Length: 440
Image (cartoon, rainbow, N blue to C red; front, side, top):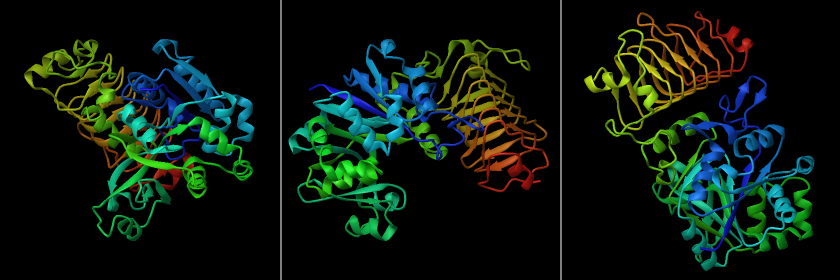
């Protein structure tokens, strides 16, 4: 396969991803640095693409946090035997979108050949060589990596690509209505449509030539995002844009998508990533549990986790990863969950579909289903007054939840202390003390 470089888009403020994309109430965590199955997201991208033969990475960062935090994770790539370079900070002043940043980067780095443009808030599993073959066979300027989804699923949620008879993209429809999506699928709600993943294989020379067009240069001075502006411009201008389905693509841009994708990865439905999960599958019933956690004794029974798993007093189902120095009490049930380092899980708690950040404490009897917990969250559950969290709750770093609390679909920004008399409605978004006072 011919050489392919990677252009990683590390921009935006992560609004949809909050509270995951906040270190504190007023300090941004770059989406590229959000933790996922024990690693920052951008690290997963590098590991996956390195496994596909990519060695050169160009990070188009926009903003101090995105640039500094991405560099803190990747450095210059020495740890993985790759080369990583970063866009200039002065380019931020003229950044009008991901498309403009890409065209600027192509010119600045004098890039030629093929490059894969990837978002940093997603993961993927695909055959790069197959994508390159399709791109070259079609003589494409840009090949859009797509996921085929039923029309009824794509409606209102995903950008849809409509193909002509020759396979080239004819137009883009952003989040079509159910009626339009079904029409695009030939009237069949279950008919498959190409949905845009935000990942593009590009011919660098051809895009650099297109960027010299005065009309595109003028557009780039005001706004030029990839999906909303650059791709429609290229199609309208007669450039060959191809839609090519890939194996799997996981959106991590909001807590619900994050948790759904987490399950898929932990169940090994992204084979390209499975080898990078740490700890790997061990000797104890094929589970991913760090040896330090297997040796940890809880203060109630005084027995190790390994002993409790063996006698059935701790039940660990499929799709579970447990990091280092995790303390787990008796009568705990875990399924399809990721448990970070230094976590305490009290006796009798049940976690299903949970992402649990480092050093979080979950008290006895807690019942959590489809929940994101940041680092050092304190779930003060008791057996007498258990905490129940469901329906894609997302609690930022250092949130405290009192005993007896029941939350459904609630998002709480980092550092909030929920009062035990609060009555928080389903789906509420709590950004500060004023929001909490309204629930008293």
